[in-house]
Length: 174
Length: 283
Image: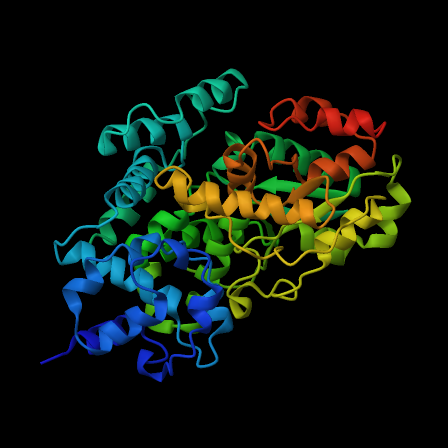
C-alpha cells in the first residue's frame, strides 16, 4: 500500500521530499511562516510521519502564496512550493476541503470567471467571490473608488473562441 | 524596429490599465512594435496552479501556441503572467509525456521556438541603457525609488532565468538611467502576499507595511514595480502612516522620455504620487 509520503512524492514527480535534512532555510525565508499553523519544514516531517489529515486539513497549505523562496534556497532542491500545490489538490480531492475556506473560494471564483469569458473581468470575479464567501461588504469603498476611476469596467473584451477555453476546462477536469 | 508579440493579460485591461497604456507608449517611443496575441485567454494565475496542475499548464500553453503563429518572442509586462508562461514553457520542454497530454487537451502543437520575455529584460538587454539615456528628456532628479522586483519575475531562477535572484539590478539600473537615485535595500525580492489580498487582507496588510517601512528606512520616497499584483497590493493595502507612492517602471520611463500620458495615469493611483512629483518639479 502506498504511504502518504509515496503519494506526495509521486505527484511532485521530482526530488523526493525525504532529502530534506531540516536546516529550516525554507521556514526562515518564508514570508508567510508568521501566519502559518505549521512551518514548511514541519509539513515535510508530518508527511513523512503519515499525518495525512493534519497536513491536508492545515491552514499552512492554503496560506502558502507560491512566492517560491523556499525552492530557490533549499540546499537539497526539495520543491516545497510544488509540494504545497500538490497538498492543496489532494485536500480538494479527498473531500476535506480547505481550512482557509475563503482562499479556496477566491480560487474557485477566479477560475469560474475564466470559464465564463476566457479572461478575468475583475468586477464579475469579485461578485462571484463575494457570493461564494458571503463576505459582502469588505472593500466596498475601495471598489467604488476604483469603479469611479474606470478601473473596474463592467464589460471588457472576452476571448472569442470560448469553445477552445471550455475544451481546456473539460479535458483537465479532475 | 524590434517586433514582439504582446500578451497584456487580464489585469492590464482593468485595474492595471495605466500599466498597459504606459507599456504601449514607452514601447512606441523606444521602437518596439507590439502585436497583441490573437484572441488570447487568461493564464490561470495562482488560482489554476493552486488547484489543478494540468489546467495551470494548458491555459498559458494555449496562448503560447497562438503566439507561435506570429513567430515572434512574447513580451509579458505582468510578472504573474510571465511566471505562468515561463513555467508552462519549462514543463512542455522538459516533459515529453506531459507535452503530448497538453497538446491533446488543447488540440494543437507546441513548437517551443519563441522566447517568453518581460519588458525590463527587453529594454535593458535589447534597447540598452546607452540608447535609453540618449532619449531621456526629463531627468528624474530628486526621485529616490527602491526597486521592488517581488517574486514572480525571479523565482524559481532556473525557470525564470531573469536576473540575479537574490540581488537583481536591472530595474535599479533602468531608473538610475532616468536620473532617479535608486536606493539600495534588502527587501527587493521579498513577497508582498499579493494572491491573498482579497481573501486574507489582515495578513497582507502586515506584509505590505513591512515593505513600506523598510523602503522608508532605506531613504526612499517611492517604490517602483513591474507587476500589477504587487502594485494593487502595495498601493491599496498599505496603512496611511507608512505608505509611499508606487509607480510602474514604465510610468517613470514615460515621464522621463517626455511622453504624453503620465498625468492621466497618476490620477488612477490610490496613493496619489502627484504631490511628490510636483514637489520635485517633475510635473
